[in-house]
Structure formats: C-alpha cells, structure tokens
Length: 215
Image (cartoon, rainbow, N blue to C red; front, top):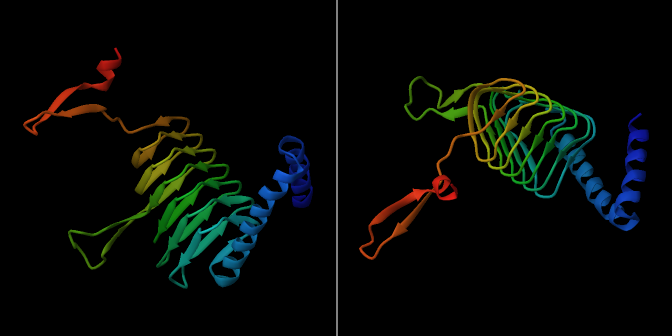
C-alpha cells in the first residue's frame, strides 16, 4: 500500500516537474528519510515511527529515558527545525504533518499535533514556561498543548502551554496563542500598525494609524 502510493506520487511529479528536477527533489527526500531513520536508531527506545523525513540541519534531542515521540506516516520536517523532549514528555505527531523551516518544539509533558496539520516557518510550540517566581520546587510550569487535525499554523506563531486548538483551525501569522481555540475558526492576534517619525529634536512623534492612512 505504501509502495503503491510512492510510485503514484513519483509518476505524477515527473509529469508536472520533469524527470531531472523530480530526481533532485526526491534525492533530497531520500536523504531526509535516511536522517529520520538515523535518529530512530539513536533513540530506538524513545521514537516510535513509520516513514518520516528530517531535512538538513533539523535535529531531534531526547534527554530522558522516559521521553516518548510518536511520529505518524509521511511526516515531513524541513530544514533547521529543532525538536527537544525531556522528563516524562510525550510528543505525538500525526500522519501527513508538515513542519516547515526553523520551527521549534519543546516538550516536557505532552504535545499532540493532529494529522494533516501544516506548520509554516519559524513557529515555536512550548508546553511549559520557566517558573520565574520560583513558587514550588520545580523550575518549570508544565502544561499540555493539543493541535487538532487539518490545522494551518502561519509563520512566526508562538503556541504556549495549556493551549488546545480544535480541528480545521487557521492560526494567523505572528499570533501568540494560549487557551482554547474552537474548531473551524480563524484565530489571529490583533495588532495595531503605527508609523513613527523622529523630528530634529529626537522626540518620537506619532503620525497616525496605518489603517487610517489607507482610508
């Protein structure tokens, strides 16, 4: 079944991209699959997975024998991504998840990413905060993050602990997310665009809201 899917995809790509570029692209994919297999061997007690691709300079770091990563079929992780898991952390990545360049996932308790979810570049997902008030003995405040199926997460999004995102959600670029986001919704952080000018006395003068400038 898996082999049939691969062959069908290759034939389609050759028709659309040409044989040479399809070869170059899939060579990169093959190297990514081999890198994923390499990490699976290194952390054979911790990583449970089928076929997944881990592109150049992306890395998985596991710091505790109790940490677990479950990776579904055909997960694709692009370049310079960092996945770190410690303590009794459990990271679950569903099948067909796409994680773009420069993403960071830090897990010490539980993070779940649903199937067919797409994550744009420079996204950070954390299930913990530093306990800067030093209340209690733990230097971390731990929670959980759950991301549903078919979610699109835009570039430069930060997802904080105790966040639950439903299915079919779109998270707007640059958003900071904490709490519950209902299924089938668009979430974005409200931001005001302001243009500032420096006069000759070096005082900052507020000109006007850019939204008003467009009107």
